[in-house]
Image (cartoon, rainbow, N blue to C red; front, side):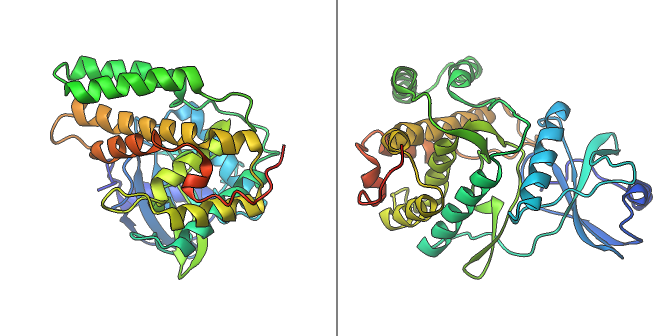
Length: 327
């Protein structure tokens, strides 16, 4: 349940007043998401999502997150538009937490995405990357290559009896990535967490991208690698090359991948799998029972790590090698 901080009706009415969205009609907690407290709010002025930012989101990062959403929305990307208060600020405070309101997006997320949905997210991600080119703010990715070894050490310190096979495997992949991690790829503002529950559809049409609270400035192709991991594997952990082809070809048709990006894709995908394995493992071994943090099984990403290390070229993900790479 993603309501870690409860709010009263009187608190919410006082919070809403400077936003000029009209009389409060109803509100309820949203039982999805794992980082923040979210509420669906209905006022005379429309429907909104209210987010209270919990301790795992740094307050100093919020101007970047909210500013990026506003920038993308004004450039035609279907994402939440932050609501500004009468004083022009987007960020307020509610129940002792930083809080913001954004517009409501229609749609549902796909529990079992099809190749059509994968194509939609590929095209939508590429459009988002292009729209973010002139956003002036930058934010370092706090979960990239140089952060993975310290995170792995924290996991080992918390769980010294780590399975020997997994420990050896992780050490070997870390060492490989530290030697081979690509540099000089095109950079920009990426979502960095583009999982199915962060993308809404109406039927087969993408209707919105949400939850930009891992967004950062990094290699654009790394975002593609995250999406391959999130969208193109089946429940038995097998890779679906039809979905991979749909996602990659649709992305490439909107923002052509460069030759170095295509060459780097297997390495980036293995790194993305390691990143999500490590954050899941960290929560798994450090979070006490009964905590508000939602723990996810890291084994899914152990399997994905292994798969990516068998890949020799992006064509094995389904990318049409006849497509002309740029650069």
